[in-house]
Length: 542
Image 1 (cartoon, rainbow, N blue to C red):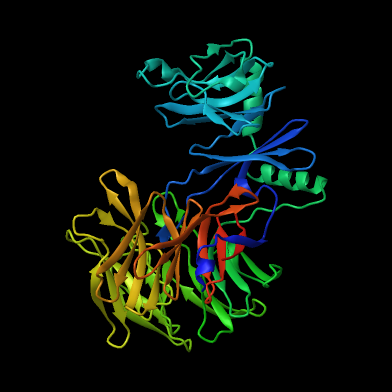
Image 2 (tube, rainbow, N blue to C red):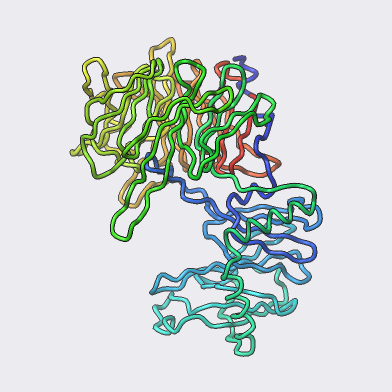
């Protein structure tokens, strides 16, 4: 890779699986008037039995579009999901309401989005439940609200009521400017009727059906696509992807879909098999609550042809597992149940032969995820019972035993550290393992608590540490460059041996921020493929 290319930002070369309203991820509510369309959506918790991604990225997503053309006017994120909203009758303004009740306390807020400036304000002082809203006229907004709990007021247990808020300059409101709303007995019946009607089915299936109909009106189509949990690049330039609702799909270098295998829950991990003609996909049915216990449905590891997606082999799994692999193609599957110690590994040799391996300590989806790319060894994270915390350990298939290599903590005085995406690199200074994770103190992950570190392998000496305020979702190494993808949408290339930043770039798609979940880098370092939480796959050149 040339020095010039290292100083260049990512350039979007293709968007695969693109669709309307992608920026809102999973739509919940559609808002319409004569000229505008609003879509309220969210990002579901990014978790499966093998790994809880975590992070700080806001989960609520909003998009506003021209009604006739569906051109995006604006898109924004927020930490609280809103389920009700209404466009102002004459101003470029969208009012959004958020309200939660946990059986004791009402909380929420009224958000005002300026559709020209993009400014978003939380209008009420303090927390304020907003269960529904409507514009009465240009000056008056009617809301379903409840007494706030700032003073521990016992009247809050009296429940919701309808109130009005009047303002002469709605576009000029700043955070916390609005005071107590005034109870509105006259408007109670009309707004509650509307609330009951909207809550009766506008969420979920009805919203998806409405969006498909709206897209059809402009000669397009729309479908919901789940998160892309895994991507792989094939030597011929094709891209494999798997995720929510997709066991495996293959796209040509042009981005055209060659074939796809859809399923209810889809897969979370993929590995190209040692034969180079097939790929493994780890299916992931979600745990279910039977009213008394959490049950884990039977799952499977499927091997499918990369030429047409046809099924080659199925490995039935009686417990949920997470997959890690060795550079020569050996696959190891670890039990992900947090309360079961000693379940034997399931090993699949490069030739497909299966056998059990020595038992491993219980897995924690919040702490022991580790599945390094390109590594010549099978590695796991083991939770120690003493103050040393978690250890990176190596499984030796010849002796069927484990050996602790080094603590996951980057320093003995640092907080407890969890595992995360990792990659192995051979350098002129020796082998290096680049490991990501998070440091959790008494009050969770603090600022700068999401870390990437380079460790001499296998001894574990720390070469360098890079800290961030957002979780790492993917790591890959090519030559002596480590590529890191953050949930914030930022990507970084770092020198593996020194940690020097070669470049940083925040990825935008159609001028809109995106949230990556998976990444793979071509072996020449010139192409980066990214799987997004909104179901799209983005191919970038460097």
